[in-house]
Image 1 (cartoon, rainbow, N blue to C red):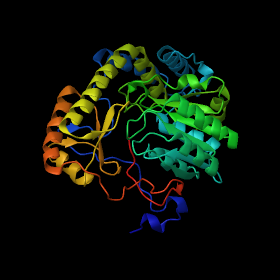
Image 2: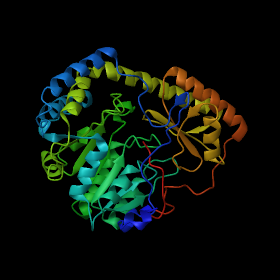
Image 3: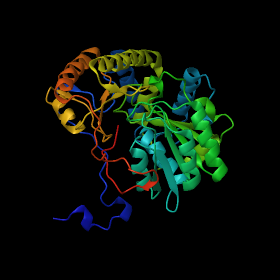
Length: 395
């Protein structure tokens, strides 16, 4: 039987693991940061109407440039962030991962490098490798914030072509201050022509305002978003970005023909009609997220400040054993390889109650203390090239 290593793989892909999270049949699943609330029935009906309209024209290719969708996304961003965004500043694709892939195809590639500050969203490194872009793992502080001076020094030393900043950061939930992004942007552009990509997949859940207004006067800055989380549409696979119109023109050089289907566009347009209803669910999840933080701290856990729809907590001598103990109680959360820490998505009140009951029992069994084991997927030293360690990607 042929093994993957028997194939003529590119060297930077050897020994890597594909993206994925355990998909187990358990009563409570809080491991992939999904919005737990199903779409409201009026929206489901509206999607059916929109898709039926699209179906009548499926013999034709979809709108290649998704103009109506981009216009509606621009209006949504303008209304919710207070920063006016034009249609020519928005681009949409199949999930924010495809947006990131297109950015790396244009601004990364062989002979170029990208840097991110880990632990962070592991698809940044995976997509970098997939596009032939060398990955550099930057370091974070012990509290998972970005050390501005240290990060700037790493950028000056590495001279990257793409800088990733995830805010709120996955898997830690940590938000990044606007001042930090500005410092990194100015540092990166002072070194060489470079793109700075702010990943705001969880932006709607943050206590802080969006970083989108930073786009003004900064043509090398990009903000990526998704409809998977706040819009409760993980199954839709619709991501988008806001940037200077020139950046939107640039990614169209590499986008596949008619990459967004008519059905995807129709479904996304229907969801945007129900923005206020869906953002109401976001407010509920923010309250539940804050409740998880408070109650986990009350139990005795060390909890990272969260601006996302998930919470990182610990610390465990053996985080995987603690993950298994919670799973044995019918609750699936995530072990993403951060030493001594686990991550739980905010669910419905009932789901969160079930998790907290399991967390209380596990605390009595496992206690909390630093995990001294090596952390899969996190580099021991800043600047370590990708491929020296493997990781389970975070969603």
